[in-house]
Image 1 (cartoon, rainbow, N blue to C red):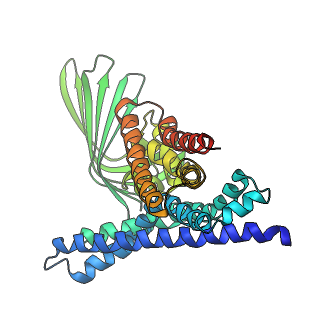
Image 2: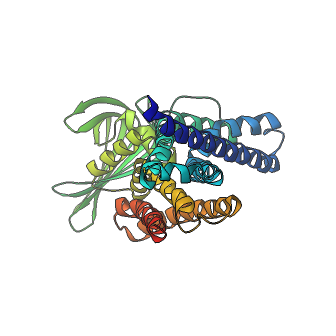
Length: 362
């Protein structure tokens, strides 16, 4: 039991400091965001609507500030222990620096779990609610797609499909199909007034089109025909419609993976969704790497400096890490280079910097 006295003491100090930093930054961001929203007030967008928008966006703000809050909290918590010479006593008692850092990282796991849970279960709903408030939309559960394009390769050439409207209830609006031969020459076109989901056949989904007008372009001219019903095969299920309606940042990890599977089935990829997936998946390592950097401020080259300077350095480091994460994401989008590596690069840099600063004064 006595063996846990010092670990619990360090963990409690780090936990309270991290909690205060995260909550403080979170509330501060909400206040500034609400003041910013007041500029958009109108007859249809009132003070109450602005407050509702900020409340729905608050989980997003929380997730954004957890890494910086953990960094700042670790600096404050360990810095207070160092200021009271308690860390010196611990080290004199035979406790290594890396063991103390391990104690400080344990509370960070709590915020890692909170971040993952909010990203997975809360953000997709609250961000959708916030969008409805901001755009003055009614509270509805039906997801819709407007202007969906798909290109399918066939034995004769290509089939280009345009759907003006699709929803998660299995309904289609006006649908157009264009048929091209291998020389990219138009050989036919069809237009359907509406359609409904019929069944799944293998990896494809069958949609029943109604009021289908068809044009056939041949060597002898253009011929027309009309059918009451026709079948359309798409790699799109009604349950997948919402994957095409939301921004990548608003999707959960499982939804981002499902979106990747959908794109792969169509022979395409979305770099924005891949970058968002890897950044969210690797976010726990980002938090832990920043805690390591915070520890280097206390035990490393800044250990002889005051707590105020360490806090300033922590805020600057958190800001720099955020900018670096955005920069690597933009590089992945612009060049198509591995989204996984570009999401991992800021974590490697911050962890490497933390280890370097620790070793510099050991």
